[in-house]
Length: 193
Length: 373
Image (cartoon, rainbow over all chains, first blue to last red; front, side, top):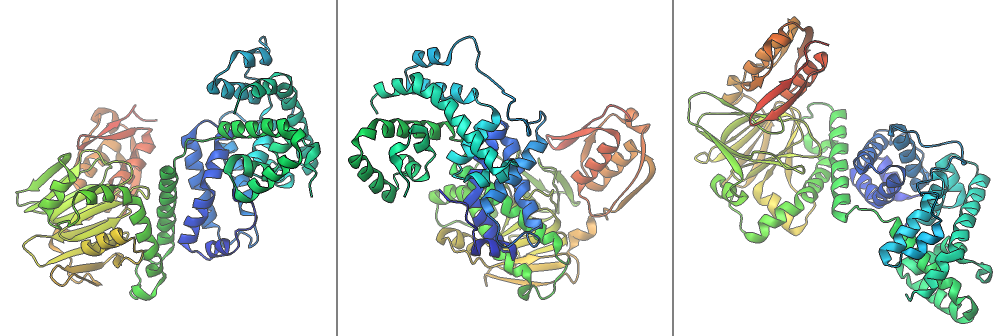
């Protein structure tokens, strides 16, 4: 997994107007960007198109961007900004407390977990657990887990304080752990792997 | 050194080294974590849980993008970027080989190769020695093509599914699919034609004509390639095209060579390809080829004119059929002027003024309007 260090020579070649550097750079970051886009919307066509626009705009402004940019953080942040502006229903950008719970609240998560035993069932369990988190919690967890970013980078991308990211991540993990440790982990332990 | 002894499952899954071991079998991480587990057998359960969770989470975050799709998107991006660079440049550069134009041509060729790699590979595996003649090319492309031959003494106008217009000279034939696929637009020409190609960086327009391949992003130009003539000529009226000898193009494709020799043409330049000598020579257009004289000037000025009349004028200029409600559109008026715009761009502008839409259906353009707005 590529970490978010400045892409050095490649970035400088890109800035100098080398189309091949653009291609290599895009190749390097395309999946990360697309995957991140899918966290923000389910409209994959919109994600593909927005990434194209993002790169082309960056290409147009290549002589105006800095020499020592943390490319990955910069790209993810730009994509987030662009995509959220294009989405019809606004993503909650300020309050952490807005919970978009997709789970029917009457049946306890644990009961559903015990009902599912197959691999697909495990995925369904995880999906339910994730859906019980707020969007911001999901995003923080995702940026840390999938994109391998540090708290200060996540803070930059999501426009938050570093400390708030740390707190949110901590709270998210605590919530997940409560579910996991109660029954999911027990169940997982019983399954051989 | 991090003290992992106090870690719970969720702490582990947030640790990058742990994830590299759990998800990617990274040798360095594997060595570390196997040794660590041996030293801390009491933590085995927690590690196992964490590893399981890491894998589930990783599946949860999986996306549907194939490597092919990503490559396609990168190609589309490169073409888009080249197109933008092209627009920034001066329209004509006489010292083309010393100018930045040449510098990006190499990149353009790379993109072209990558973009058509799969399609070319398919045709190539069936037959390695590809003939350059029209008949062989058309046969190889399969039977899904429509063929038009101009046996009359006048230029024949043909509307393609993407809205590009081909003006086919007498004694000439063109084969093209009823519907272009998304990734490329390929046609086969024998004889001479004037092309007015709709711009679409994501889907380059390729013309195979007697041992040459002309690649276009969106422009208008003439290709002259009669099989009984020793030369193929391509000359450009607007925009920019790249011309390759078919031999070079295909050899480069097979060997993966990035240094493809091609010639980039800008307005009022032309290239002559000598089939026997397998050489491309570039020059300025001295005397426009015959067909250019038969293509009427496409500059149009409509001053406070009913939309219906504009559409009738477009029909005449481009020699295509437009289907629309004449009564409705006779009442709406507008003032518009066009110079280099192609048919689709003109229709876009006209339709926008009255909130209409249009569609290319079976070689004609159907305009859907709801009166004036």
